[in-house]
Image (cartoon, rainbow, N blue to C red; front, side, top):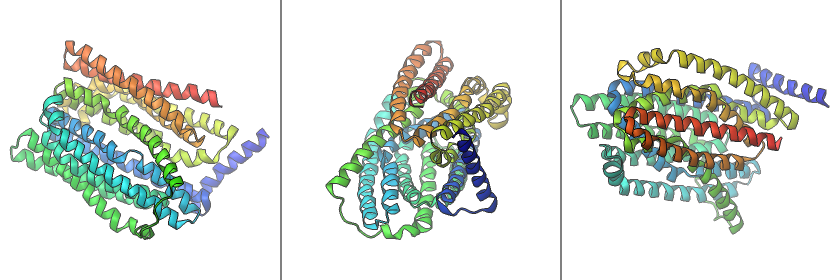
Length: 455
């Protein structure tokens, strides 16, 4: 039996390589491989666009204004959680199943039901943001981002359109359309946002007005992406435009139950990723958030490229039991080796990286990048273990661990930042970095321990 498993594993690998070489993407395996390539290309494009935009804006805005920009963006993204919740994941899951069963009427019903939920959530998200903008900007943060948060409502609306249609396209296995849409969006924002920043700075506007025009440009980038995705890739899903029957009680109950579970995971993930900036925004000056963001964005982009977890899911999903465990071990060893090299490279060359990419004005970010480089070892492995649990159909493990890690992250951030604040804003900022590294490490260790329990 072990010999048969090894032979089968090797034949699966050779089949994948053969299909790639011949560009033969027929059958379920071919579709999985093609989709993985487009998913990876989309993520790479997203990360590349993000890091290019980060570098350009960091140099244009300088640390204080760059920090305020990142604070406003993090706050707006938290509010998008309300508009996103678990709609995308639920839509992909139920629409895919009904399309696979060739039940178009049920697919239309699922689509229309979730579209109504999406519209309500987007409207609710915008209303809550607009109603709380004064409190957040002027009372909690006490920083000039009021107008930026107002402009963030455009960001939420057009992002809501794009993300919903992307989920629909994913259900139809149209990853190519999602990739092309990402290219359009990245080109739009890399051009429009820096242009808005330069024009606003040349007009000698206040920081608040500069940020306002930057986020208007951000919203316009999503508007362009929404127009593209509606009039090009989305046309292939025209059959969903026709009204379907109302979902019966059984299907509604099933959808809503799944939706609530997915929402918990997404909500925890958003807070896990952005609570550090929200707490820092309350206690430290804008320039320190700028240094912090400069270091974190570099580490996040590098970790995502190393991880390439989106490519692994279709492959892991094909493997069972011993095959999956062997594939997992090999992948972990490979990822750890690449991560270790990238970690040492970043650690040793941090000063040169910051100087070349951001300029001497960001010298205080050198030490932050050195500490944050620990995440280069942690985040890629976290991505691999997440794919492992998804392939084993145990997303509830990720939910439990992520909720627990998020709680730890919030507690550590608050107490470390407020305690270290007595030593100055710079030291308090390091407190947030330490909190993020520790909570991510706990999340990874939790997955490692849990994996041993289910093997």
